[in-house]
Image (tube, rainbow, N blue to C red):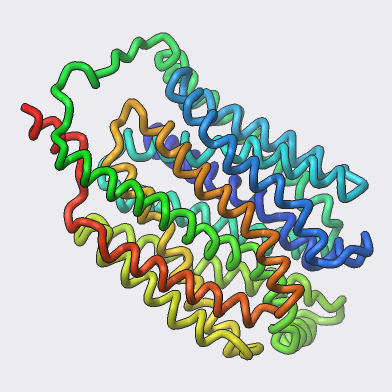
Length: 420
């Protein structure tokens, strides 16, 4: 593997780790802590909310520092910092302590998206496929959070679900530093002159088009983030409620095949969540290739339609049918992820790209954080069936917003040509 492939591989691993760390608590809370600490699931979710606010709010300063200092240096800070924070969280003893630990994890997790995606969209071509491949790794991190936590709950303790990934992340941080040391030094010492003053300002029509696209990007980002959070954070609990019969049958079958042993229902539920997340992540590769060929407008409309159909089909389903429909709406939830990043990568100036991604993820993860108490309220008051119907309504809102996207995105290159 040459250095360039290793570089992209470590960036992808970083996306994997980023989402794993932010969702370990979702499985731990759903399967263990509500019993161990005597708190309801809705109460436990409240302690995760500040971490998701940090995940969003700190994206903007992370992008600003990366543009001013060094993007690769910030990636080293991400790997090592989030690893140390996760290890510390694994030693917490109270809900308040774990809430503080999740907040610090969120601070370091905020680094990845504005910085890592700015590197990916600046360094390599085939933007749609690169973002999609990177997104698949992020989704595998989402999936592995449930799988790893479920396994360690059955065969160790929930604390190991924080401590072991934390140790791995620190090792990866030093590996990234060794690979990019020369690049970090070169980026720190280079003087990048802003090029905005060297060209005439863009035309009024271009600015109007760019404003329209920006409003749609940030609006759909907020609504899509609610859908993503509701599906990824709540899925372990949804499966815990609706797949108990299927999980018990699979656990008994595994015991019969493997011989005598304990009933690993939590592991089976975590494994089913992993399978759904992993298979659904393939949608990003399909969407990435379609973005490069057809552009974002029609692709986004198709993805929103898939979400609408299967969110409406989910209420009342259990076991095998619930698993199948959950897989289908997760295809839509994951398929939407690369679209807004693609549009920013195409329309944003490279020198400011990390900061613009930072703004995008402030919007995204603020929506993620505010949706947690919303999920808790809906679940506690009406249950998951009502949540699915609300998410179907969100899919309709996205579809309507996307219909006013232009067929061709405005780009900095087009603006420069128009100004000459």
